[in-house]
Amino acid sequence: MNDTVTVRKPKVRKNHIKMRLIFFLILLGILLFVTVFADKIVPYDPYEQDMSQAMQAPSDMHFMGTDRYGRDMFSRIIIGAQTSISSTLILVAIISVFGTVMGMLCGYYGGIADSVIMRISDVCLAFPGLVFALAVAALLGGGVSNAVIALAVISWPKYSRVARSQTLALKKSSFIYAARLSGDSSLQLIWRHILPNIAGPVFVTAMLDIGTMMMELAGLSFLGLGAQPPTAEWGNMMSEGRSMLQTYPWIVLSPGAAIFVTVVLFNLLGDTVRDYIDPKNSRQR
Image 1 (tube, rainbow, N blue to C red):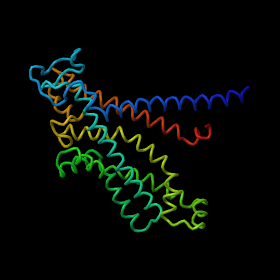
Image 2 (image 1 turned 45 degrees about the vertical axis):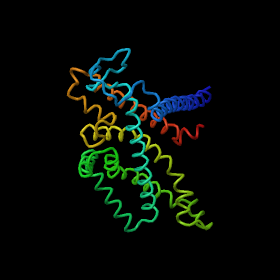
Image 3 (image 1 turned 135 degrees about the vertical axis):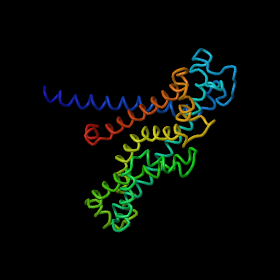
Image 4 (image 1 turned 90 degrees about the horizontal axis):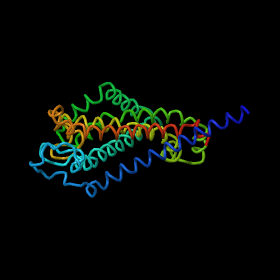
């Protein structure tokens, strides 16, 4: 009886995690669909100004109201997803790939290059991330691309640390020795054996990092160092309406809600992916 209950509990947990993963992937698919086809979905031109409709409260005609220039907030939120989400995904892709490559090379070869790159990563990790990004973005000037570069400069070390520690553990494994004896070169060992084995932790780190990077990009735009008006970007939109929070709150709350929902979705998806690929749950599958 007890053995039956013990077997049933892991199976129930496995099914629960799988259903959660499917649910969040469906929500992510909807979000990405809206992002890609935003210009086809918007009910109004997000950049067309109509001063006669300025500061309209949410209504049947304007679901999220209008801003100071009479632009439909709902349309600007949708079109702003293209800038906010795409910039975030590009940023995470850059830092995860670059950091992972640096970490694998440092962990596998070691030597002076390992010491130098790890000391550089220590310097990056020693500063508060957003403060360091503000300094870099201020030097580069405003713009979404410069904000992405600024955050990339200070965000790659976490991936290099993860990749390096995993590589150090793997390169002394028996299957690596066997592959080396079979004639694989160092690059083949890294590509065929080490990378597939560290991809899971790196992928989970990237998934959990999307929400953080989105908020930091929005923070730079809010401070005027990211997207510039009239570009529809959620952080920039909050900055434009921050002086009207008490009188026309929807101008700030609408993009704020978009950031909140998107960050929560990516964080929950990241947690679910981490649970799904956990070795304990893998053995249950």
